[in-house]
Length: 192
Image (cartoon, rainbow, N blue to C red; front, side, top):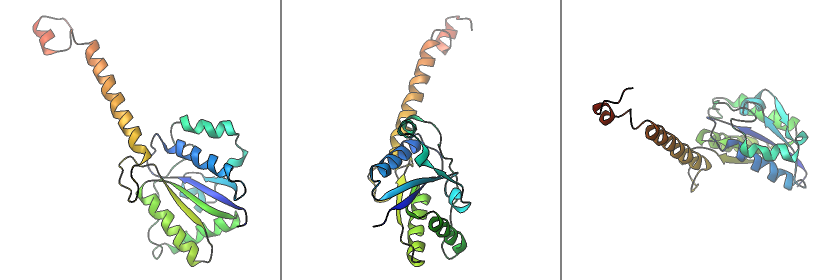
């Protein structure tokens, strides 16, 4: 197989794990430099591919890529842009393949929820239909564990952590004011 570049994009609502997934994808691609050349990230998700607004991640240091594990937000920008069926919006899919051809992209990594996984599948279909072989991989980031054929989604842990942290903070807040902020304290004549 000839050396091909990759395209990575973030999609949907940002979860606490989306940049950690980006880190994993970029580091793994770098470990396989005999098969994957550059990794381009789409600025604002799939819109970056449609508008050919690509970020060359190969100029980033190993330290910068590793720092993504602890970076909040969506490092490359995300979007909620759903590509409809290939039949309804064939021109958009053809545009993706046009951009992929222009940048010699043979791998498409789409980091998002259910719609993103569906888009990765559709891109693989249009690639085959246009005689442009492309490996499409959906990277889950969703919090609701609803993606078929996965046993868990990485975002689930971030939600559990968020809920646990929020409850802990609320409990500490209540405990700090328990002498004067409860009905019992008011009945005892505590002045607020």
